[in-house]
Amino acid sequence: MFRVFVLALTGLPALLRAETIEALTPRANYLLNCGGCHGLNGVSNSRFVPNLKDQVGFFLNLPEGRSYVVRLPNVAFSMTTDEALTGLMNYVVFTLGGAKVPKDAKPYTVREVSELRRIPLTEVSLVQMRQRMVRILIDQYHATSDLSLYGEGDYGTSQ
Image (cartoon, rainbow, N blue to C red; front, side):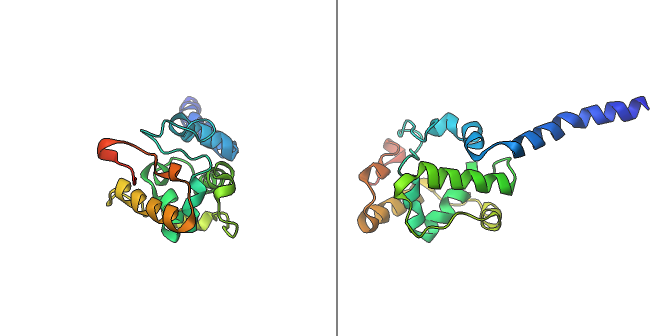
């Protein structure tokens, strides 16, 4: 009986943590998983981490941009479930992305996020990929030039 009690207690923290994470709102998940680097409201030190506020929504103009934001390694490898990550991505894109989200953009579905996160962007230069998309978004979709304000030196910008 004592062994059963001890075994139950050793699994309890993991079970409680899993249930707690699932119970969090998308904003709470953002604050816990992304806010430390991207800022509480999506405004960061853009020398090191791209701003999200009024910028991330632009990426949904491009099919590869839509998949890019989910396939980023820190997103794809998140410890959250597909359901929680879907809520988080919709919060990031549609709330933090603000009015910059294309009018016809549809929210991410659990199935889409589940499929995209299983092919993380680990075999490409994220900087080069982002720079290419940013140039297209500025040139063809009238994205603000602030979208290119990320990094310096080796990290470069598309200016």
